[in-house]
Amino acid sequence: MSESLAGKAAALDAADELAAARKLFALDEAVYLDGNSLGALPAHVPARVADVVTRQWGELRIRSWDESGWWTAPERIGDRIAPLVGAAPGQVVVGDSTSVNVFKAVVGAVRLVDDPARTDVLVDAGTFPTDGYIAESAARMTGKQLVLVDPADLPAALGPTTAVALLNHVDYRSGRLHDLPGLTAAIHDAGALAVWDLCHSAGALPVGLDEHGVDLAVGCTYKYLNGGPGSPAYLYVAERHQAGFDSPLPGWNSHTDPFAMTLGYEAAPGAVRGRVGTPDILSMLALEASLDVWDGVSIDAVRAKSLALTDFFLECVEAYVPAGSVTSLTPAAHAERGSQVALRCEDAPRVMRELIGRGVIGDLRRPDVLRFGFTPLYVGFGDVERAARVLSEVLRG
Ligand SMILES: Cc1ncc(COP(=O)(O)O)c(C=O)c1O
Image (cartoon, rainbow, N blue to C red; front, side, top):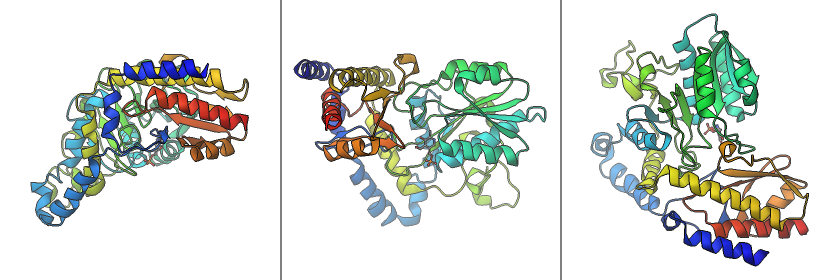
């Protein structure tokens, strides 16, 4: 059995049109299945960051705000991310954390709706916690209430009191992919606005923000976009909403003429309106450099490989691990699967510790979930077969 799956892995790797991308990353012998938490380092980034530090900062100093393009980096890098999430230029701005952008997006959406009869901010019940905490505070500050809803029940929960729905595109725990086109349409049919958190989907699968009429979206850049630890997040405000987008954090960087230093705030047009204060240039330019790995890459090819990787992992797990020792929380249907596999098992903390000790890097979601993220740009089918084989060894003790 093991030989036939190893052979299948070799054949799949040989036919993999994205296989060459792996050499763009600094990787070692370990099987790195934690790119859904922290993407691997693209190998060219250290030299680019060194240039930013030693030449742009060290030599050009203040001149770099203009001459090295520091000032316009948030919108320039936003336009590099835009095609990866299906957005036309001018709608994505990079900066701050996902948490902060959730705040801007939810308050901004409530203000766009501007209807006192619409009292509810719906959030998916399995949300990554920060979204729920911030949406609750945003709801309270805008005189609304938070309503937690299972995404499966969302269509029934929507109605004339719904102002905004904030949803995670992929559930961080189970890897379930939610139906962004269908749910966005249902939210619009109810007269509300849709805000999506793309942390676990951007860079792993096509999102289609413009195509599906999403209103606002946020996402991080340190997972499948490989921007580095704590790299800045992004905010998408659909063009049709930009003129009415009233940011709850109207910092001087989003002023129409920041250097006029006027007391009165006048919001800049376009994506820039989502900016707040001075951007974190070192992280931002590390992110910009890391985005080079996407040159010439089709997100559809990424999605096809992602599904093949997760299918193959589930096949190997099924074949190798003792029956009944793990249960997959990840949907079998492709239409409902992101780019990770979550396995529930007994003694999960020990199992993950031992996996990591044997060079298979995943992570743990307490109390009993093993998460394995599959980044199509650098994970191969041989890695997948090895990960499942080592998992079975660990489970067999
Ligand atoms: C879905 C989702 N939203 C938000 C966050 C975290 O946001 P921040 O970068 O502000 O910590 C994460 C982090 O893993 C996440 O998975």
